[in-house]
Image (cartoon, rainbow over all chains, first blue to last red; front, side):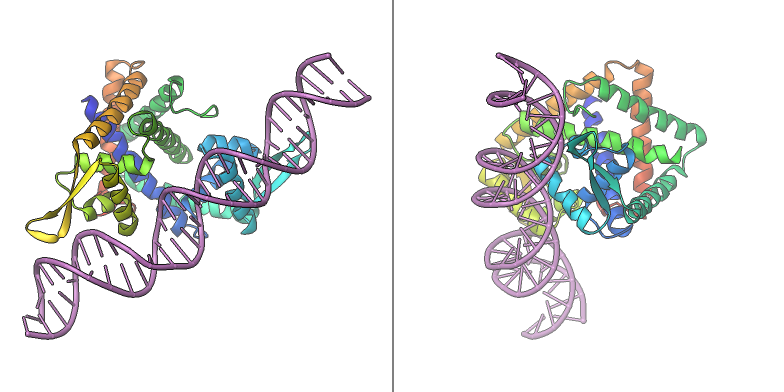
Length: 150
Length: 150
DNA sequence: TTAAATACTTGCAAATTGCAAGTAAAAAGG
DNA sequence: CCTTTTTACTTGCAATTTGCAAGTATTTAA
């Protein structure tokens, strides 16, 4: 049973990874998977700094810096110095960036709806509750695999 | 609620990705994440061909070919022509490769046990059942994100 | 018995990576 | 106040990883 645990998660995680990959190519601007994750995080965090997003994604800051540059170049992201601490760069999505992020999000949710459409309401609630529980416990067990910002 | 669905999965998937990453570095030979996934799949499939594993992982076959070469070089994997069709290369783990894979697996399971240790037996069963259900339904919905070998 | 398909490998050139070493701004210490 | 240290980020560079195009070898189809 324990053995199956990792396998279960591995399969799910891979499938979800494929979904992410497919959606960032089909969805909007034909951006890379890494870029898609960056857009997602910028949208979900409240005026995050470079550090914060890089940390969340577990990316080296130098690599991240360059990825952001490329996103700025294609006009999906902007970077502005924090007025209270000018070392810090605050990231946000441009109107176009928001569009792309939303497009990806819609596609993913459409697929996920499809996945859930074969479940009963009870099952759906169970699954959601389960993953919530999983996330909560993974955060608690900070022994491993949690960047400070989780 | 729908919006939270993707977020839920995104967070879980990322955490599990970090676990995989950490474990392949701590676990055995300081191999890369990609290599860790390859070892895992070779172990779990029954005498797979190059194509099969590459397909499962969603990797381009040329990239995969080179990754396998590097794993052969460090003596974790062997490649043998299929006697029934000599175009096909059958992959298997060396004794050392099995050791590394097992090491990684133990570390991951130890972490996962830890995560589950704060749950009741009922909760644990629910979570397992949920992810099984999720996997089953994701496979069924082949619209997207499933390589032929899933 | 020749043509087409399959399984894989190599040549390249582009993209991605991370460490080391930089700049610039803020915080801490004296 | 002025110097030192720390923090946030950027660039140089060299190594790795990537995928397309074009190859070889073997098998299947015609």
